[in-house]
Amino acid sequence: MTAAGLINTFNETGQWARLTVGTHEFLFDNKFINVDVIYQQDELHLLELSNGQDWCGFAYTWLHTEGGLPQLSEEFGTCLEAEHIASDAGTVSISMWSGEFPTHLVDFVYDGTALEMIRSVNDRSFWVGRHPSDAFLDVHLRQTLDGLLGNDLDYVWGVFDGSSTVQFFDPREEQTAGTEWLVATAIESADVQLEGKARALLALHRIDGRIVAAWQRSRGEAIEVRGDPDAWLMDIIQSDARIP
Image 1 (cartoon, helix red, strand yellow):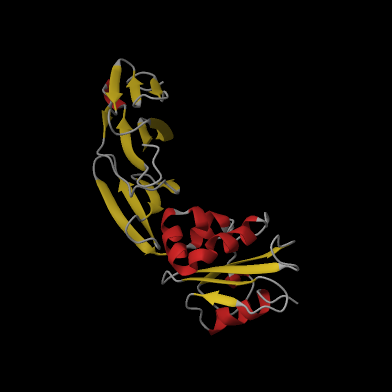
Image 2: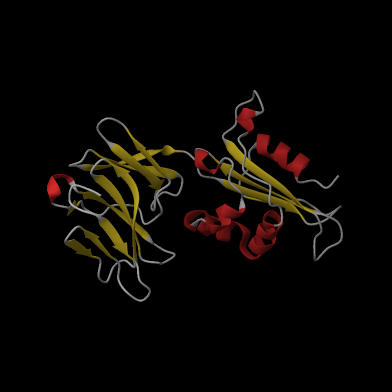
């Protein structure tokens, strides 16, 4: 219950989303089919709006319920889903990947009145601990991977998809030497097309946005490398992607 009444969301199949706060109703006709409250701080509520589309599928707005009169802020976002929500004494910050620069996070900082968009420095730390198959599903990374891998994309993706426990790791956590690459490696237990085992590596550069993929389909075959690896990453590729 809020100062303006109970919040209810209505997401019905074939209907545009709507939201009620007490006796007040907000309609999202011709725009969104889902509305959900995903965060609340006192009488401030974050609404996630979705149109169900793969491209530009999300937008956000703040709902104020103080004083008994509910009001919505302007809609904001990058078309992508929110990744992090953080707050302090005076502001709430929503972080999401940029729709314009795939290697940037964007923070939308709200103080209850004004909304400010701040582009964070390039940082892919978000990928640490995540399965590399997620990179093939990310709308922006997928565009780069399509161009990088071409007809080999499904094959490389399949090697990772068949390895459920693999994840991106930050080599700096295990080595004293610094590097800006986040790396994931996988081995396929049984290649359905070739005898032997296949290995693959996918690396995301934390700062400059480069993506490198490398794979070896079977024992004795050449290692295929796509992208622009530096000497440090080539050493990893030649050791981790090689079939012993």
